[in-house]
Length: 82
Image 1 (spheres, rainbow, N blue to C red):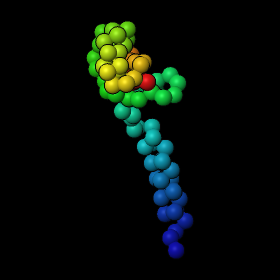
Image 2: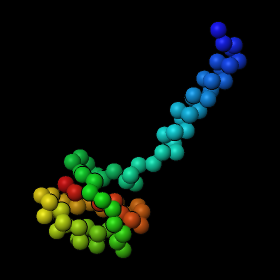
Image 3: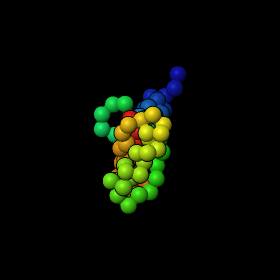
Image 4: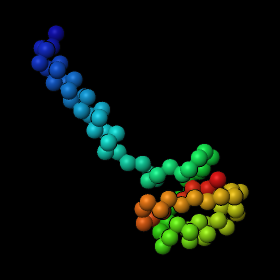
């Protein structure tokens, strides 16, 4: 049987890792699009959200989608179609 001090130390290390891992991991895309049904299709650098959505709409329509949403929280915008 392990000593109580060892069990407490291991327990604290596991708890710290359980908290630190989600806080330091990052998602592939910065923000989720509004609503349901959006599919991430890539990312591109555009000067504005409006230009991103206008230029990406023909690509979306060619692939069977009818809407485009660009996440402008980063310079390289995540692009979603629906």
